Image (cartoon, rainbow, N blue to C red; front, side, top):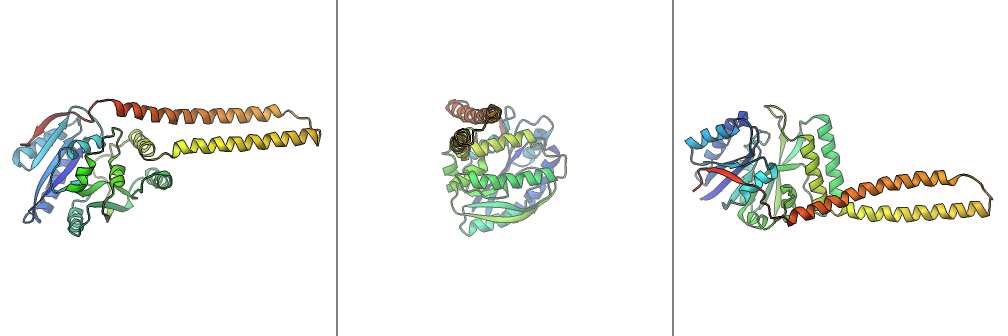
Length: 310
């Protein structure tokens, strides 16, 4: 009998906890003859009754386990908290908002039985708002061009990995982490299970624009050297442009005897490149900050309480 561990980070999801638990138990009971299972909720310091809902479930079922973080460390750190402690044959991560359909777990396990080591749930259609939908599409297109890692499109943190992949993941120690890209970097034998992502039922997502921008910066700066290479391209462009200006002014002055206030154009160009310098100084400091953050010995997360762990 193989063992399946299902990881669910939860932040302000008290209305969805019982719903996802019922759906998962129904799915897991259908394969209980071949797979033992456990469900681990990682409460990322929700300031509502999410942890009480999880406690109720855990008090009735020893296969429901709970990790409570000491403060809100973030979605990626909440996932990492369990990945670093997991040791079962199959590990499936998913969100608590029911936008990751539990029925897909059966298809993902089937692919694993076909010798795939990483199985992603891939969204072929998403019911997001217009702005979020098309900014995501644009971002993926840009990132696929500049990233040093082959990036799976339209996947989130709904994935299955086996024990061998988990063992490799535990060796990755970076602190500014984006787990989806870390598994893309590991890769192994990968396949996809396609689905249409349903709408969120309760409330709006807690993944705010601020968090998404922060995550986008982590993606680009952690998995691509393109911003640094872009600085070299701009530098080359400045040399070419300044050379053209010099040749033009020289020709116009000595051949055409032109007399015009060129300093006006030079001032505009200088102001433009001063603006570019500030942008690239900011990018450089982002890299320096990440270097500093990696050298600190602070833990990625702190566990304040655990339930049903031996």
